[in-house]
Image (cartoon, rainbow, N blue to C red; front, side, top):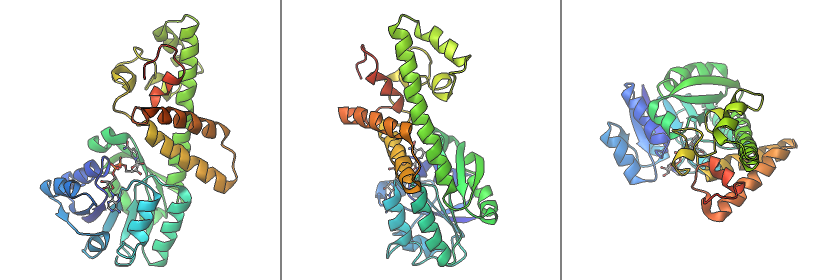
Length: 298
Ligand code: NAD
C-alpha cells in the first residue's frame, strides 16, 4: 500500500521504518530535514509539506506529532491535509492529544469526506522500534477494519475503543492511572524503607499482595529492586517526567470539559510539576520517588 507519514520523531521514525519493512511504499514529511533524510535513506520518498503528501496517490495518511496544536496545524492549516487530500482517503492520527481536539479534527475530516481514526499508542520508543506498540483506536468500525492490517505492521495489540476520540480517552485514562500508581508505589516503598524494611523484601511482599501493580512489579522505582528499569540506571531512558506531565495535563483538560473530578490525577500532576520545576523533567517519571527519599540525589 502507498502510505503518507507525517511526523518522524522518536516514535514516528521507527514506526515508519516498520511500515517500509512490511513492504509498504511511503511518502514522508517532517519539519526536520534530518528526520526526512533518515527515512529517505531507508527507502521512503520525501514530500515538501502535508499538502504535498496529500497530493500523492497515497491511500492512507498517518500522523505522529507532538501535541494538539501541531495536529490541528497539519490537518486544518492552509497548507494542511484536509485542504488538499482526496475524499475517501483514510486519515490516522497516532499523536497523543486531548480527546476533544481529536473529535474536532475527525469531524472536520468527515465533513471533507475523509474517514479518520485517532490511534494513540503505548509502548514507548522501544515498542515503536520493535513493532510491538498497543494502538488504542477511536472511530467507525469499518475504518478500524481497514486500518488494522497497516497498524499491525507497527503494533501487537490493536484495540477498537469506540467512536471518534475514544482512543485518546483510553490513553489519557491509562496514563493518568499510571502517573498516580507510580506515586503510590514510590510513597509505600519509601515508607517501608524509612521504617527499616529491605526494599527488595518489601517489593516482594507488595508484588504478591493486594498492593501489586505494574509500577511495583514491572517498573519498580526503588533503586536496586529490579534490573533493566530506569531506577537501575539513574532514571535515564524510559518515559520522561515531562511526557508524563503532558499526559496528566491532557487528563485534567479533558476532565474539566467533562466536569468530572480527577482529584488524584490533579495531585499527581502537581507532584510531577514540582519535580520538573526542580530541573528533573528529563528523568524517567519513576524518579518521582526522589521527592520522598531523604538520601536521594536526583
Ligand atoms: P518527537 O518530538 O520526537 O517527534 C515529533 C516530530 O514531529 C518531530 O520530528 C517534529 O519535527 C515533527 N513535527 C512537529 N511539527 C510538525 C509539523 N507541523 N509538520 C511536520 N512535522 C512536524 O515526539 P515523539 O516522542 O515521537 O512523540 C510523538 C507523539 O507520540 C506525541 O504525541 C507523544 O505524546 C506520543 N507518545 C510518545 C511516546 C514516547 O515514549 N516518546 C510514547 C507514547 C506516545
